[in-house]
Length: 252
Image 1 (cartoon, one colour):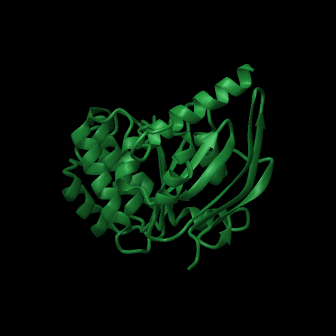
Image 2 (cartoon, rainbow, N blue to C red; image 1 turned 60 degrees about the horizontal axis):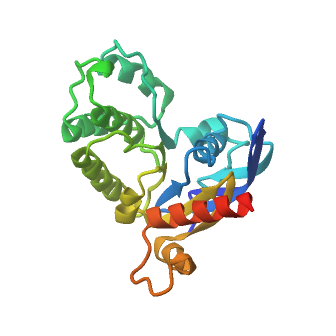
């Protein structure tokens, strides 16, 4: 089965931080969570995948093609939602959509209207009047309306109330249910990934600590359990204990 995303050996040097030899892949019909504490390199990795920052080395293949060779064509088939994007806050959604749709030859207006109805979005409202949850839904509506095969999301559930988060996680599961589309999203809310992710990639200080399907990932960290401790560690517990272990080693 053709990978929708293949990241091989991505590195990027900044003053005081280095993203080093990051590699992972994502198959169709899967949700992958990209985890790591703040500053671990999650957003840099996503921006490198999109060529929003130019990697010093490594390759990215999207939908089976080299991004560097067909960037414009490939980006038409990808949906991207980054946190903190406010567009033109005073503009109505209808005006923002009218501009956005011009960039995608595969834009499906009927599909877009369907998502507006499904997400209960009012095109006459200004972007800034939307709640954080509704802003994410609007960005998803834009991404899905040009028939994106791969969604790349940066902290899409951050700042949302539990009900809105639950609704978005359900939407994510529905998006990949047909086996054709996949989602890669970064988050620090690991409980979300416990519920919806198929695969996990864990970044520690700019390097991939592990990438695997969720079951294998959780099993691989059994050694972090205390003697006699029962049950499987959660993703949050794995991150806390891994970071504590790394801190103790650095302090020696």
